[in-house]
Length: 481
Image 1 (cartoon, rainbow, N blue to C red):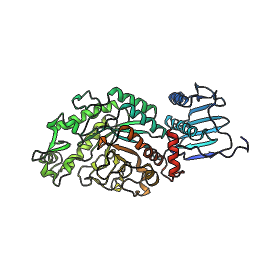
Image 2: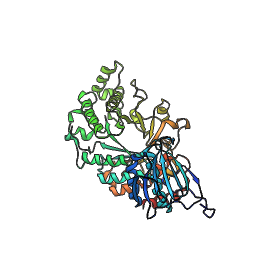
Image 3: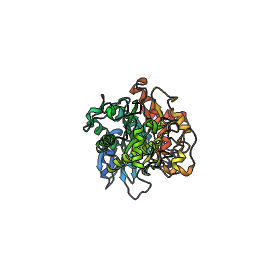
Image 4: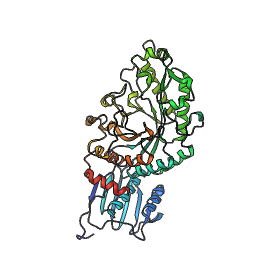
């Protein structure tokens, strides 16, 4: 490096790197003899190395000494900073990407890939980077609208470049049940994903450091399952069926749902299972005990003379969480399944997925946070892409997320107090297909592209972004091309 080289500037990436120490020098770009190599003892990074070599069209030499022109990947457990942190050091016509864990090194390769795409070179100097939040992702409703394996895999690749690490699949609802079942093939809809396709999706996700989270929503949103089990349909005292609701007073209901939870817990190897718990139709009437005397009787039998239908629903949530916990999964559930005035307390280990303050049972975010509960942000004001825009929903824009939203904005547009920040584990942008034919899958992919990029930025760093929105949008277009 000589004084003739100006001081470098930070690479242009999405999300933006959090720290760049400038230096003088030409930076790095791959040349004819360049290769990706692994540092000694870093053989676990072989997949990341091969992927990067393919993307940069360089050679790959495995564990070998780095030469001028090379890019080296290194696991460094002593580096500190958390498993998703990384450092990119560029000097002397070489790049070294290091981190304490494989995920962090992988994110460093995404930074290098984007720096080359946005600026033609990796700038001289040192990037030190890590996410503000541990959960960053996309929530996809494939029950109401079918998205095939190839479409999902394309989103995984897009998410990986944005350093997102979770894909949640909502594959069971009133309209359809979209994954092959061996325990209950009678409930499966067409079209659906085969288990072989799901394993292929999971294998790609794992290679990109993305966890796939299954969701089977209950005791509501079970219409597709109940079509095969009409005797388990919740009915009022007048015999009227409640859409999507299973009768939680019947032991066979719990048996059926638990069999499904166990089957798909075995299919999905990640550490989470979403058990739903929202919008149970027994609780949307003025007097649940009068409308559903069988639920009231079951509640009194289980919880004593003062037992309520709400207690029974909360007990159902705890029981389903226990089922997935036995399968070594942590349960997630929607916030309107956690009731304020129930004698049954939801297990503290269940993560609250906060989406609304509008539904029966929903409370302000501080009600959950003040109980010490972990919360994940899926604010329906900013992060809900609802096909057809029913019920006053409008398609969220990347600009609005980028300029207004942060993980602390859990409901509406007002952030919760900063003292709760550490309890907010992250967030996911959500696609819901209420009016499934309102957009094609290609339109959905394009419609969520900028909102997803903006969400990734604010989950990686909730502070003021370094780029204006027009600059960010232009960068996203350039990187997407």
